[in-house]
Image (cartoon, rainbow, N blue to C red; front, side, top):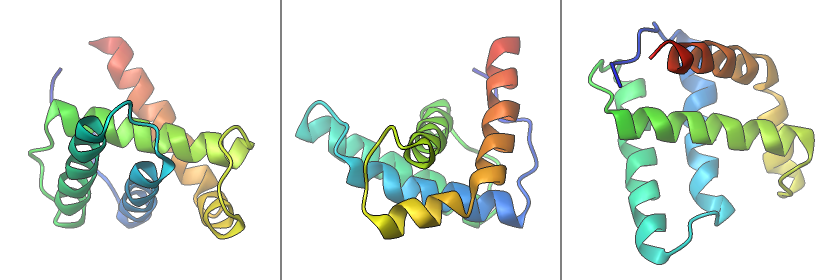
Length: 110
């Protein structure tokens, strides 16, 4: 997997960083060890995005995509969360869809 060839703008970073905070709280990992790995990847990916770092690893990229997909599933009602989290995810609806579309196209090209 190559590096992400996408320039994140402020709203992209905000939506992605938020999704990265939600993903670990969903309890989707199959084990405690995997949950810890996922949490660390979410933290490192968010930090890199916020600092505009370009050295996002393939695992961080996959975690970003998983977080955005989870946020979209929350918006669609396929993953149940509290009303506040759902509302906050919905506020990023268009950005999440744009990013997922862009990243899924990039993945298909590889």
